[in-house]
Length: 166
Image 1 (cartoon, rainbow, N blue to C red):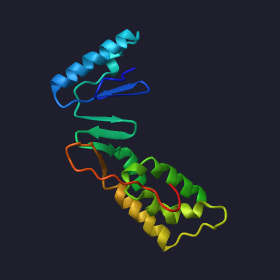
Image 2 (tube, rainbow, N blue to C red):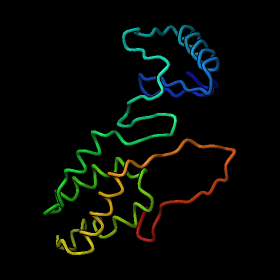
Image 3 (cartoon, rainbow, N blue to C red):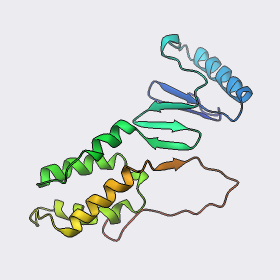
Image 4 (cartoon, one colour):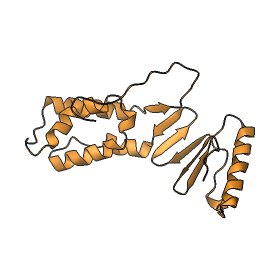
């Protein structure tokens, strides 16, 4: 519905509009409102938030720097204890998977943990698992930021794949 309007994202019932200047913001907002009207849609004024420099949504904080992890999610992870069985390991990995895109080399870091998910191996927490767990906790609690792409800067593209899986 908002296709063709730059600087807009629609996710379910949330619309995000960003801009470099207030004038651009106002133009985009006007275009979005026109488009919604053409589709017979209305906005709930009580739920609209305008001209923010930072917003919280979808488990993240989005600001001029980029996308940050939600501090509430980070606090939950910081308080997480090393798992004592496969069920708790799966819970940890599920919670961390939500933040995987913030962790460079995520697959490689977690290999000592994910390798224990197989039914062919027993759950044994040793030095490699503890090291992986501690490294992951340190990275996640450091408030990593997914930076906003700047086409004017040098770009290096990497992928986070390992020979053991994606």
